[in-house]
Structure formats: structure tokens, C-alpha cells
Amino acid sequence: MVNNIIYSFIITFILFGLYVELNSHMTNIWWRIDDAGNKQIIISNLFRLIFAPIKYLFYWNPIMWDINFFIWWIIIYIIICQIYIIKYRKVPKI
Image (cartoon, rainbow, N blue to C red):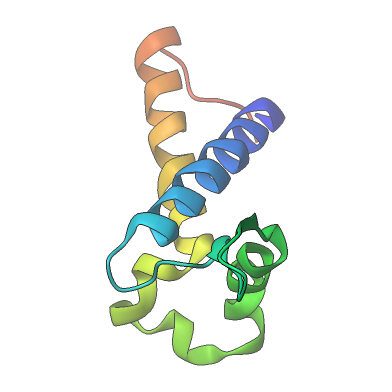
């Protein structure tokens, strides 16, 4: 069960990070171009976006679910548990 939580977190972190960076409405979250024209990776911006739903309630509106990390995590966790059930034919212990 703990493995499923860890796997889901890692997969969610990677997919969410790629989504917000490649989404045409969000870009430049963690891959930025500075004033000198140099490309920089700024992971702290991604962490700010991940923890934003804890600070701001409007991230919990359904229209904002696509940039709410915790919604992503729940969905991916459910998918991983379903794959586990199909593969091993048993429900993971909590």
C-alpha cells in the first residue's frame, strides 16, 4: 500500500510538472528564460504551484482541477490501485 502511495506521488509529480510546463495556458512555470536569454530550471516555482491549493481555496473549484496537484494525485493513486487489483486480483491493504 505504501508503495502505491510513493509510486503515485512520483508519477503525479512528473506528469503534473510536464503538464503545467507544456500546457499552452500555463507555460514557463519551471523552465524559464531570464533577462539575458539564458534558459533556467526553477523547480521552486513548481513547488509553489503544487502547494498553492493549500493556501488558496479557489484551486478546489472544478474549473481549476487541471492545475491542482492533489486532484491529480488522487486520480493517479486510484488508477494505480485499479491496476494492482487487476494484476494481483486482490485489494491492497490500507
